[in-house]
Image (cartoon, rainbow, N blue to C red; front, side, top):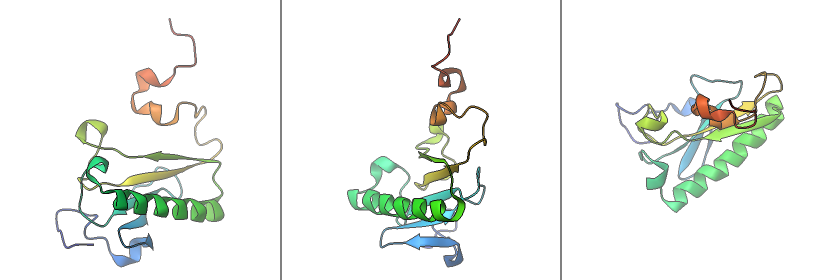
Length: 131
């Protein structure tokens, strides 16, 4: 990763890296929401998924697959959420693209239906009758 004191993803210590390829790295999230929460990050400092090159996207997806296999083997989650917060309005707090791979476990939420739709709680539940 490049030297950049402002960006924590440009200065990741090598000891945090789980997987690496020429264009991306995978690390455990420093503030995990579940056991095994993993981030996949392009090496190049780029803020938006939409500004990433095709090669960067492919590299990230290759590491996503590797991380999923490792998580499945180590923790055996029952499912996964995969997400990107792209832009401040979407909740992005670090201006360096990163993909979240969040393992989900049976019972970690009483009703997990809706998954990523819960980013807008008033719109998440589309399956029950609304009055």
